[in-house]
Image 1 (cartoon, rainbow, N blue to C red):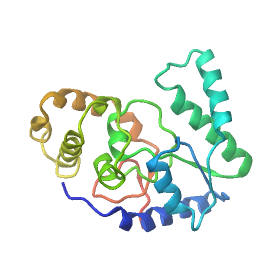
Image 2 (cartoon, rainbow, N blue to C red; image 1 turned 90 degrees about the vertical axis):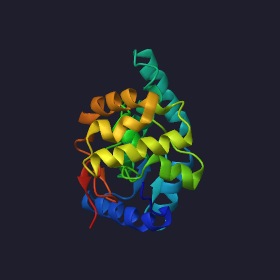
Image 3 (cartoon, rainbow, N blue to C red; image 1 turned 45 degrees about the vertical axis):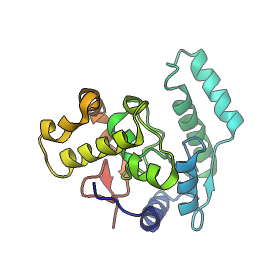
Image 4 (cartoon, rainbow, N blue to C red; image 1 turned 135 degrees about the horizontal axis):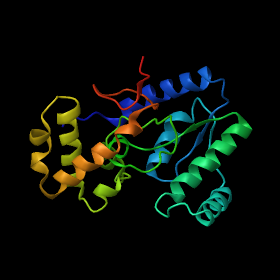
Length: 210
């Protein structure tokens, strides 16, 4: 699978997000994803030109408690809590809410998204892992090795960008073939209404690249 240096991606992503902040008349961005290598990478890319905030951890915990008490499934409480807390801070401060989900997550995770604006939405998990030593993964890849994650990303490239038949694209994944194909089918609806800086020939959501 062809990769690209993340250092070259940063200015493109920063320019696209700054353009969206300007379009929405915002005063910066708020990260709707928990702290971690991906969030820190996004912060580093955007901070030189934009105000970048994160929700208070206590506020996130309060929201999570309320969601759990209201019966929200445990598997989505944390993600929903970060989204709700970020949106509240964004509304109060005039900030654009953005998430740090990567492309592999968008395609294979049926859970809730952190935001509709996703700076890393066209960056594969395997690319982030190679650069940062860590990448968030969808549940279907929770126990996959880095080599397997790279193979899944390569299969998705073959299928989505090169137009390979499903059997050809995913047939080499072994035990992961059926779970990956099922996860891709379940996440179909999640590709709609997203704003993602376009870095590859096939991007999830709208093409914001100039």
